[in-house]
Length: 289
Figure (cartoon, rainbow, N blue to C red):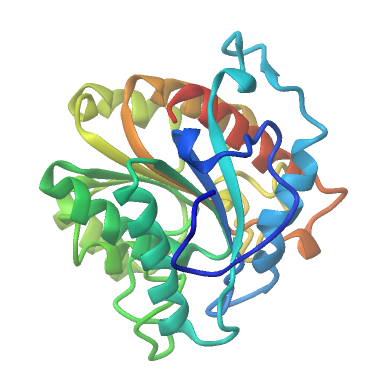
């Protein structure tokens, strides 16, 4: 049995999880962290509820004609984090990501707020270097230099990630909210695609092939009509079907890690957001993990 250097809380396992870390190629981990959310808190409960909802799904994907039991993935449970301590929490997440990467596994982290992505991206960059690209699916730019005077916030995730990954290696999809300065920054330094996801992703797919790719998916990229259970819902988003199609399209890429963040069960309606997140994770495992 794997002995981790960090503490974990036991929980329900995601549908189809095996019981042996050493035999797994993919490692799932919940990150119950929502200390910097700016509107509705509650995403710390996201991972556990998504796991529960996964049992309402089939192990078979009719989209891909593949079964989850053909993939070897291990659900560790949730990280134990010091409530309210942002920097120490980030350090713990970073150490967990480093250990998973060093063990030769592909990490699949379930948030939690979007700030959890920063230390994971840092460790992915430490392993894969300048060739790595980040695909960012979100309603919000997340490119502020700071938010209400705070250096670390879920509102500046990709600006923090740009300390490691070159901005020209970060691709933003589905964006429809931010301040003018963020859009100006992205226009000058990065690749930002407004409103849509699928067609922009198709347009850059050839440029991304054979590169290490890290994918971060904020559930609010999807319209709140399909995903109301999130902390900062933003009308005018894509459909759940478009996000599923995008995940299937990424099967052509060399994805080395993935996170899905900002599901907030206490703000959900009939668990439809958690169920959607569980299905997106199932399809991600079968598509590109």
